[in-house]
Length: 516
Image 1 (cartoon, rainbow, N blue to C red):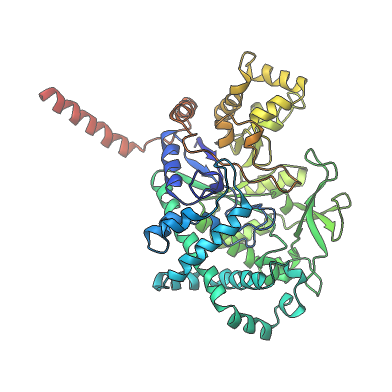
Image 2 (image 1 turned 30 degrees about the horizontal axis):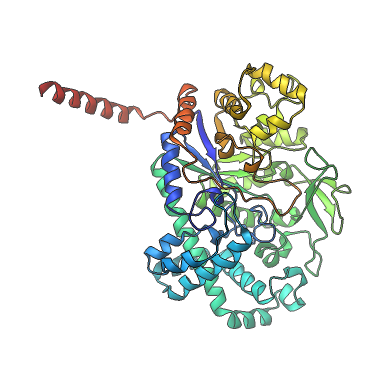
């Protein structure tokens, strides 16, 4: 089935409180997707972010980001006063998230709501249902706050290694703080699932994003050290990254703890099964980030300053995915198969049957044999103009080498296209391709320049901030996207029975008009 969707992080939605969230604007965006003939909304990871603000380095792979909790909903429920929200400093820009202001204001307001909250049966059911990750996460965050935010690998030994006596003492000492974090996850979960249901009811399915690794500063690593390559002191012996590439001459040193795949296999991949189950509870489709890491992963000795001295090590391969599908059934997965690829990656992709990704910004720098060019696609793939790690298409076009730009003009036959509108030629190329799914980032639909870029890999301090302004997704843009979606048959077709009902209603209306 040929369909189309839009990539827009939740954080990039408009809202009056400094960051996109599960507010009215999210529902309005879904309505706009329907008008535009879209079938998919792709989001970035929804986990709670920490230092660096990256959604790919969350405090938990299971938990949700409290920043996304809609304050207006809490006001309607009587847990907040509007005046309290309006008095907070959410930052001075509607176009960018000020994460420092967000941290200082959001938790203060949410704490006020928590103090008015009364636990009920629904809350208790949530806590029991999600206890396999919730209790570790809430205890981890409470202790982390008690330790002034320090990385857990630097905590005292009894806390770092979860000494049972020490843990019981902390549960008593931090009882209210732990309950506060349970409340945040409860509110996140129920608000997001209302949005997801609304989207599904309108024919929009959600594509979520699952980072392959967990952050070192996470409840996952702290609570389950045996899952990772760590020593007896719970310190990583090797960390994740990728070798030198177009983004970095010295490679990317991500610093995530690497999995002990032998241990995972011995446990029947039970942790991964729980992780994927939670993901499909939150999303309809899961994009698995850095899919090539399941074929072979890049291992960098702990303590290195760059990724230059890493090496490739075999991963779990198809065994992991067969085991998960045996437990969970067929999984709707998109494999992020970008980066350094080899035959083993292609074999794993083919064996899994998952669609890989095609990015048009990678297509024009090596001539007509480049496999990212649309004439090489098969149906079972997902095409993007660019991703969250790329520059916007408009800015990329301005800064590419002259010969690359000339080849793109020849390929797209767009010699006379004004540069300010250039991203739409690449949008058209994506929509017209044979790929089953085309996903267009919102910053390309809005023809943003470099100011719309979400992330500069291997950098800190200026990422994950861009937001769409209220009213930016205008009717003319919606109509233009709808026209392309209709033209290239990516609009969801009405089921035959529903179409017959509509035709009968139309005939009836015409008959009544004629009688009048």
